[in-house]
Length: 200
Ligand SMILES: Nc1ncnc2c1ncn2[C@@H]1O[C@H](COP(=O)(O)OP(=O)(O)OP(=O)(O)O)[C@@H](O)[C@H]1O
Ligand SMILES: O=C(O)c1ccc[n+]([C@@H]2O[C@H](COP(=O)([O-])O)[C@@H](O)[C@H]2O)c1
Image 1 (cartoon, rainbow, N blue to C red):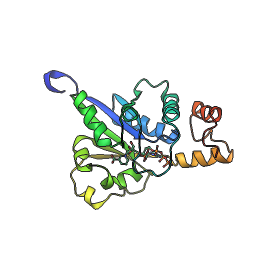
Image 2: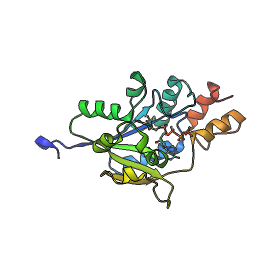
Image 3: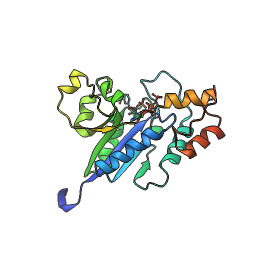
Image 4: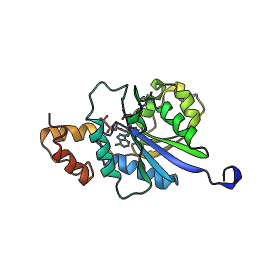
């Protein structure tokens, strides 16, 4: 219970390029909901991913595909906070903004092992770690790689299992004209086909 007896809300934040969203993203968000008893998971398509050199599909398409992937689960919510904001998308800006607007909330930042391993390169990562519990997806049985600086910095982290799927593989297959039905939700596969995404 929070102050004045109100229950503290537990909210997962799942940021990503989602270019495109795939089954492993959905499975991870669902695991987080269930295992950590979250009230909701906010899906946050990135606006400007400052560490990515590659040009992404248009934000409107990435957003539309996430909407299709999360349909039917009321505890999944799409948040356009980083699409609205100008300039590079820094997760700390997002968390600060949400934190200020939603007192009495515990925040859980959901991310893959690859991002956790390079967390020391993120903008003001120490401050970020003070505001959230990290929820790290890792290959079952594999040890979690962590930068020594991050390991030495006091923070909370829980580990969830991940599936072996990547957006890179979805884009590769789509470009080669190969089926992607086993990698993405059906509605997302149809969207990619209809909009001729990732063809070249
Ligand atoms: N298979 C997976 N299981 C769990 N988490 C994943 C998986 N793939 C990506 N993630 C995590 O989901 C978040 C969003 O990832 P992103 O949208 O970049 O997908 P991606 O598959 O890693 O894309 P790309 O192949 O283009 O790098 C990141 O925190 C990333 O680490
Ligand atoms: O805040 C940062 O400096 C920062 C640096 C790299 C990645 N992130 C966030 O990590 C999330 C996953 O990124 P990606 O590139 O794997 O889709 C996405 O929300 C990014 O904005 C954030």
